Length: 200
Ligand SMILES: N[C@@H](CCC(=O)N[C@@H](CS)C(=O)NCC(=O)O)C(=O)O
Image (cartoon, rainbow, N blue to C red; front, side):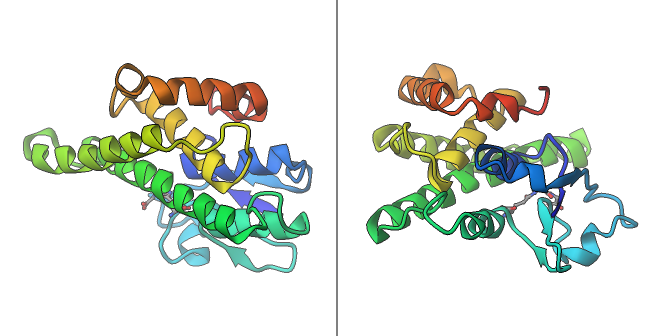
């Protein structure tokens, strides 16, 4: 399998973290992709031009990170990333959607400063995205997933917090102590989290 993603993509990290933990990474080659480069086949393989993208050995192209995680779960025979029990499964999927939303908003904050000239940067838009992040963090702090569990929900929450640590869109550590404790416990259980940090 070929994974197209930079090491800095938080959505790519979801895939690398899951694949490393499940030892599927040994069956994967990783090549960076450049969404901004019109010549990169990424836009051909995924018309949305987003990474991560997984190219299967039979040539099929899978995107996005949620679909790829589901495929990895399927390769393991099920139950490895998506709980089999329906109640736990939909809890995990909803946690994944919420943490993906944190990353979507956090990426838009980064893109605003990266792609838009300073003079026309729109503060209310940044505050609007920041509100999504803060509300989602509040919701996770009020009802955190089990930090001992390894599934799409906990993987995505850990990657979202790791991304906020790196890009510092919000100072979540000073406002959400419960999530600091949550991430410490998750990291202790899942050494692959630190191993998949962009800088490592
Ligand atoms: N929902 C997608 C989001 C992927 C995403 O936003 N990836 C970013 C990099 S972290 C990207 O490719 N951005 C380029 C763009 O938006 O054009 C997923 O879960 O994979």
